[in-house]
Length: 376
Image 1: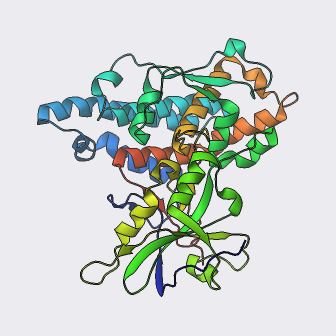
Image 2: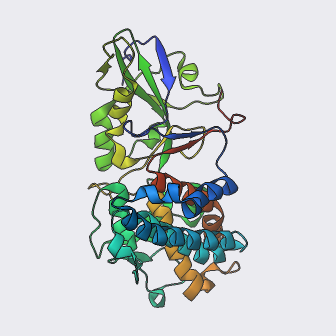
Image 3: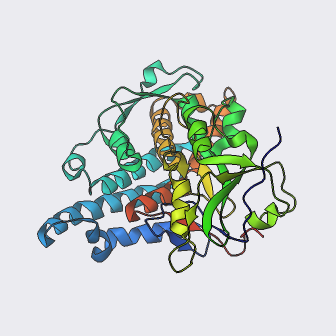
């Protein structure tokens, strides 16, 4: 098939994908555990930081601030302790850290629900657990997880919804290799490059991704609704600021454009909002190389967002259940692939979960880029 040529443009700007109505936090260094822990500690110990999250009178704010800072302190203590525990055993502490972070986050929208006795919102019966984890399923119950899911995605998660573990784990980008070793293939989040381009009168986004990264089903239809594949331009590597060593990509331009502002300046937020129309299936980038992550619907036939932040949370809950009740499934002599997979979950998800929490508590994307690792 012969692809059409893209609209000509004369200038461009590399732009990580984010909600154009909210200014992201830009960090001129790489994300690190000490950095994020210290930033989150501000929420636990500085009243002007933590208290401003809450509406109402000073007395009402102080009441919620008391709960908030102690959820945060508990979460930070659990997380610090988890860092000292080797292998997947740390998932138990990581989960209780994330549970308390989640309750702190939900205080702004469900203050009466998260104070006092609270259910996890997920269940798993270890008594039914087989030797392989491939057939296991989490079941959504009333509690923190569906509340957190609705708060972060805007969609309700029906009580009784089942989340198959072999489908859930591939939505954790950090353990792609290990989940493939276990045999769990299929659609999974994929990074993409994103640039806003402009001519003398209008601006629009173009994206660069692997042809195999375009999902099937509802996600693919939504992507093709807003973008069309076009022929690669000769200087595509310069435009997207990637190495000459890279190849095998396809380029897609937005089907519509936005006019420049009245003074002639390009409408960058307007162009960014074109891509953000796919927000249900886009996660913020997790490093300096990609500009966004395309996350296919959990079920291709219907809209079911599953951002990596929520997949990490649910998988960590599952790992904590196995650690408590069925550690034999991690036996290296009998199930080395499973042991390696859950060791990777404990090791690789810790920092991204902290970033997820910081972004949620501060209500904006957290974009990290170490100056020494920026792409060319």
